[in-house]
Image 1 (cartoon, rainbow, N blue to C red):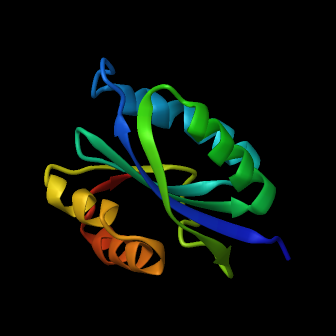
Image 2 (tube, helix red, strand yellow):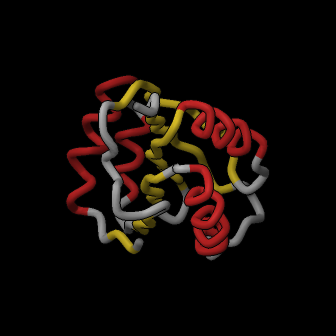
Image 3 (cartoon, rainbow, N blue to C red):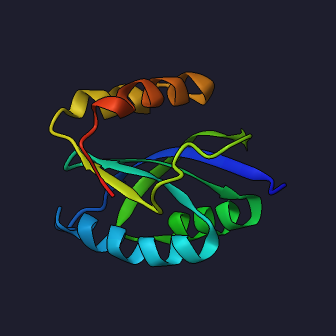
Length: 131
């Protein structure tokens, strides 16, 4: 059995980046993530990113290293990282949800650990996800 891992992080759109960059990020990520066994959900509120992704341990580590170097966002903060028994996102490589209410992502940003993950998973059914 594959050692599955999951990460939940938040970050902010880098100054000077257009909000429509998110579509390009997702397009690029889908093919790369499919090849590496990564699946997950990216939520964007026009200012802040919140991403929850999962996959094989080494692929998750490699993706996290790329994300930490990506100049399109700043202030990346990992809120939760842990082992996973089964995938939460078996249907798509990267789902995208754009939300208008910044309070939800701000709230998650203020939490940490299992509490942040639990809150994100509570909000997830309300996201309009394109995948």
